[in-house]
Image 1 (cartoon, rainbow over the protein chains, first blue to last red):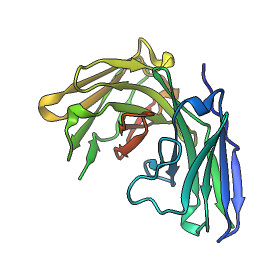
Image 2 (tube, rainbow over the protein chains, first blue to last red):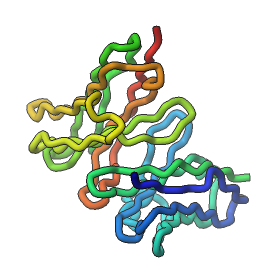
Image 3 (cartoon, chains in turn orange, green):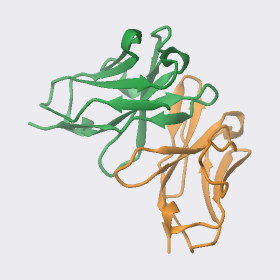
Length: 106
Length: 119
């Protein structure tokens, strides 16, 4: 079955750039998206179709993809960005999630 | 304004079934697939399947084949997810999510329904 791999944790200082990766076989041939989830809340879509931002998502969130790796980049990271982030891809008739990355802003 | 409102928390015994509802408003219900995703305590997101509200067609994750049934009632813009033969490890928050067409990204999510399976 298809798998997506994320680092379990990433740390960043306030105001710096955070990068979270998501790797999967031929991921560049599929569309990747990213969710932010804060404790006790439902996931929020922050990037879809590799690099598109839904309305209302700050432009400090961006997405890119190269080969087998998708990357979520948060520029000028703020304390409010501390959350779990999940990548997702659509493989054939199945949705696959990455294991999630806990972003710590310290 | 798009809203997905789910039914309330449930407590079930092992072996029982649970049916969670997801009422949609603010958009054409039959125009978007609805996905169901669950999250066990302290764990990541797990996809269960999706339903095409227009046709009723479904795709289920292999893990849940034979135990999950997704249906919809277009007259009241509501999707349902029923999970049978519950086990303790089915204890989780269950979410419905409307999916964008390309890449199946979930752009709107319900508030989640906690299902607790305990004897």
